[in-house]
Length: 366
Image: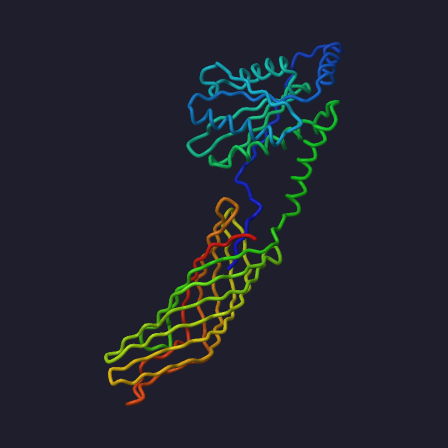
């Protein structure tokens, strides 16, 4: 029963395309002029083309520019609004001509822009022409509230790749961009695990499967303290209060309550925002029953029981902060009880040997 914030496993898919072009740099004097430009600027420049028309897309572009300024704080981010109609439909050579024009004018390291790629997808384009070749990268992301942030960090990594292919003279901004790429490479080889604690309030319902007699249905809630101890393993302790069963034989009423402290241990796998895996639990159960019969008999039953369970943990992460958790399980009870009427020894209700349970909770990291 555990759910933690994962370091997000992003849905970004990176498609790489490096196109080698001759840019008309024909002599050593031209090369020296380019080097002089690179060395003269205090901060490297990244140009951002603003190419969309709708208000929604313009807002997305502005958020993207803001995220770039956070991700590349050693760079000057220069938005450039283009008046070219239907920019997305221009052939590649026309786009590269525009990139070269504005890159030369602003002495930019690279140029980037966003394009729509269907109703659910937005694409980042990154082009660098300052090294005698055209460095072209396309990054695709799912359109959503976090798309601009994800694409800004993707742009940071691509800038690092530009410098790794052809390091310029400027020092610290280059080092930071390259470090971001190297750190990402290390993280891919060594997946990070969010080891920590979470608290989970939950609701629970349960009922009899086999061995019971009468209406054996219980409902209630509780709280659980969870700990992730390894990449795929978690354990926790919980305390639940249950009401029920409420059974009405033909001449009376039986009401029950229960208290269940327990421990559980689980193994899980991650697929995007979903975690799934088996969980094993063990609980002590303190049950108290009250019965009132039509004959006037009144009885109280109380006893301790032990329940072992096997279930499946299903955890869905919401905005990388909290998780919704559902845990269906089957349990086995060790202390089967049958309750009889004092006046005639007839069976009123029996506890189950096997029952089902379903828990629904909200896991909050602490």
